[in-house]
Amino acid sequence: MEIYNTLSKSVEKFIPHNEKEVKMYTCGPTVYDYAHIGNLRTYIFEDILEKSLNYLGYDVKRVMNITNVGHMVSDGDTGDDKMVVGARREGKTVLEIADFYTEAFFNDIKKLNIRKPSIIEKASNHIDEYIKIIQNLMDAGYAYVSEGNVYFDVSKVSNYYELSGMKEADLIVGAREGVELDKHKRNPFDFGLWFTNSKFENQLLTWDSPWGRGYPGWHIECTGIALKFLGSKLDIHCGGIDAIFPHHTNEIAQSEAYLGHKWCNYWLHGEFLNDKTGKMSKSKGGFLTLSLLETKGYNPLAYRFLILQSHYRNQLVFSYETLDGAAQAYQKLKARIKQIITSAEGKINQTMINAYKQKFKKALKDDLNTANALTVLFELLKDVRLNNITKKKLIADFDQVLSLSLITKGKKVDDDKLVTYINKKIAKREQAKEQGDYQLADSIRRELKEKGIILIDKKNRTDWEKED
Image (cartoon, rainbow, N blue to C red; front, side, top):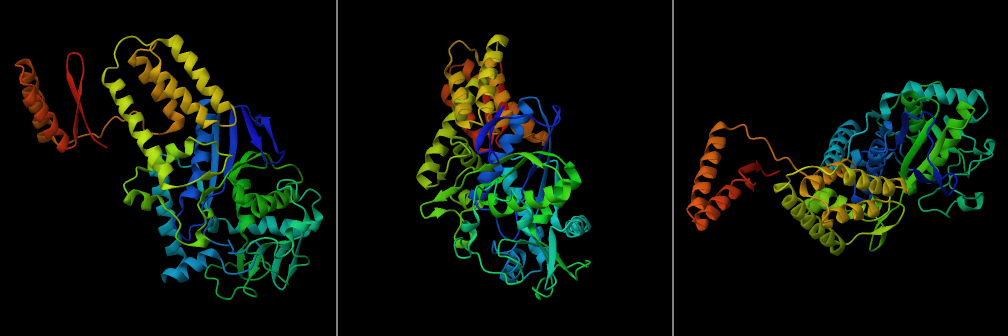
């Protein structure tokens, strides 16, 4: 597999530390508000990556954090904690806000068929881990205390700008949106590891530490959780491109200063989803959520389908026109596949199965080229050399990665009376067809469909399923 590595600015062959297991860390949400669909694009990309690695034969141990403390509203470690902003906005406690929006996030990713990482950890659960790392950094001369707060000294790291490709001139206060001067720092480029009440008197979540009662900075949380659950060497670290600087840059600096060796080999970043005004952002207000799309009648999987049509490293401009096009194409795809499933009989052509799987793998190996992977899917649908049972098997195989619910099994019906009613109606319909009364047969199909029951006519029988 070849993937684009932000660290080297090039496409590289992927070689994990352990050929049997890939250790992967992905930055999770700061749960002070709903995730917008731009955020969700990143999680779809990470989901495709994990499932592609599985499809190609790797076991993946994936860890994701839930940030419920320490994420400032400014890159310059100034302003309030985002969680405090959310709590103040809604008149609730920080923990109430965190629990509500964590659940909302999980609901969103479920609707998008995004697999939950095997390990999900709240930032607030690992304070002792952060304190241990920070103390080690202080002892080694990488960190210092100023006005009660602990900062990392970036001047001690020679390769600090390697990931971002930035220069110190790019970091001048005012050169970046939302950056303000923190006068407690030795220089404006240092970043916070631990904040005390000397700076934020209204912080609601605080803990005792050697430097006073306070709370951790955002960056140290990901380092602490990753080290605890994945060990001292990562294979892959993911996020959106807005996390490259400062978040991932700071993670590398503190992690490698603590460990004394290279921490992560491959850094992967998903591009922005833009709206007509530019980058989609919560700070601009009026951002689009998955729930809003649902209220307008869109299937969340139509949005996933839209995202898969574009490469994860290409910017994508969202509009309702493009979503309409994706929704229509997705509906046609599902309808075509349903036709195939209803007559999927015969013998599977294993030679063609193998050939198409190789094409699909080639697309995934090419830096997760999901657009080409979809092309392979459409190619097999049109291939007259394949019978429908072979097509069905390939569709199900590809959907392990695409996760578009292309083959639905239907919902289980536990109501015995309903099952009896359905079977009687099917028998009456069969009798009507035998007598040439197709008008009655069609009316029975419509009657069952109104009750959410879909009939599937096969060669010698009629099956049925309950609509999702």
